[in-house]
Length: 263
Image 1: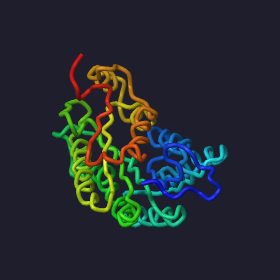
Image 2: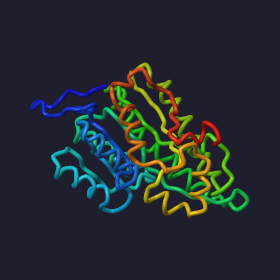
Image 3: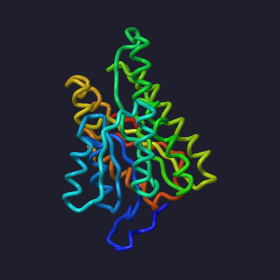
Image 4: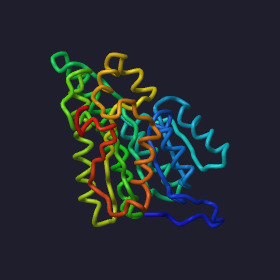
């Protein structure tokens, strides 16, 4: 729920005064959400694994008068993740929203999947959600806060190309975890929801998916264009805001209709 506004009353917007922890803010969906949230009055602590990248995007927003700070954090390291959560919460005075946007990746056909790659994908797509949410949980319960987790439409459909077995398993775990967080958090007023994007153009996906894979994925979307970070950010804005106060335990597909049918 909404935090107390600053004494100067300046903050305004759909997230006015809310204290937000947002992962993966160097670019793509994370940077888009960071800007939109800031424009709607949120106070934000962001992070990214790329050295200096989270602070670079934060600095741009601070120059425009927004309260945004960025840190270098390897979220696959549970101690580093915990330290970031605790220091960010101390700086903001608590947590109203935890948006687990960051994720790594790894793809291989199942017949070629090695255990090392399997475990890597689970670590950088599923474990990192635990690494941030566990230390944030007490504070979220105190504030009746909101958790937003990024999943994928790969968890909802079996997809042959690109070798997505590990990715699908990890993101399926994110969706299942989200529902349990919603159930356990309800007594404290905590809401938890997941977002499952379809093919979204970003530096990470553009690097991981070749032209053939991109064309194949878009051919399975009813709206045959790639999604953008802003497309996803507006859904996250709703889930972070008080407007969604009766929404919890849900997975929202935002995928150009890819999970709805075929054209």
